[in-house]
Length: 237
Image (cartoon, rainbow, N blue to C red; front, side, top):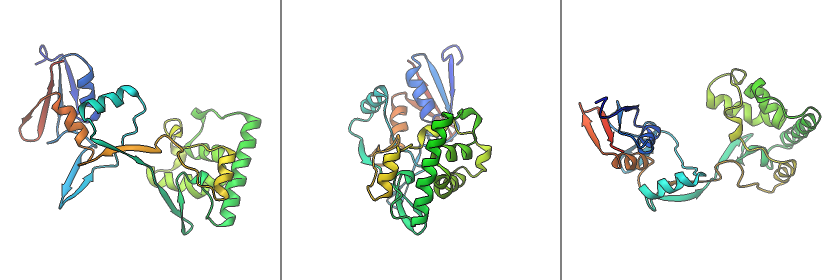
């Protein structure tokens, strides 16, 4: 097999299957599960569809858009994000930092004043070196102590299940929307700020779950089930 297929890819998740499609050399993909997709798998039960985790497509690269359109034409529908945060007894539209209206007045005041203080500090000292900041420090330096205290720290502590002083910020800070002062003030006085962040809109399959994507990639490669629990997907590019 090594002579015929010089490249072996471990794992038939989206990354492995995409690699097999794009390498343009003979390759073999090994997968230990009984189905492809990795975490992008779907389970159906009693007429309901469940994804293993929340996979939504945020396609900004034209080449990736073309690939998805080619292998699954018209299979995805576009959705606008509608996310809410429940805290202080109210629902706040995402992103929290730009939609403070409706929270208790003392919380709004703490968040707005903290944001202004953070702006003034950065204006005087410059943008901090991300490599020197923990996630907790970055949240406070970027958004102010109020927004960090009332949303970013408790939410991300729950999400990552660890002390935020043990996490550096460079790998995740890009994904958290940074509103302007005007946007923070607009949101504090009642104007809903929409369309912020990297994923204000996303694609999801019209039918079935996210597994339609890895399955379509697999169909382009061909596959042979082995021992009931191992797939070998062979690409003869």
